[in-house]
Image (tube, rainbow, N blue to C red; front, side):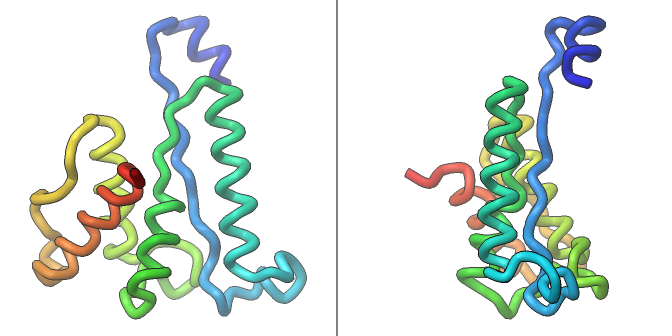
Length: 135
């Protein structure tokens, strides 16, 4: 697909949206990923980074941001009822990472969602920032 895009639009920039591991109680872990969410995250992360490099694409590391948020504040639910897709909170975190990558901009200080407290929004903005600036 990237070759087709580049053939038609040589200056097009390709982005890959990195997803995240499913929530720890998801049924996928019954038959797959004996190492649980940690294994799934590590495999997803490696695959997305490899694909981005091979395709000369820019990675939008939403999965990395989710993992950092889950590690630092597991009580903040990013998962919808299916334990895989995003709640509005998870979608807000994704939007922050997308915004920061595509605009090469700092997501801190962006407006919060009406469904989040100011503190939650600030926390997620910091997670997005830290995900992109790990040094």
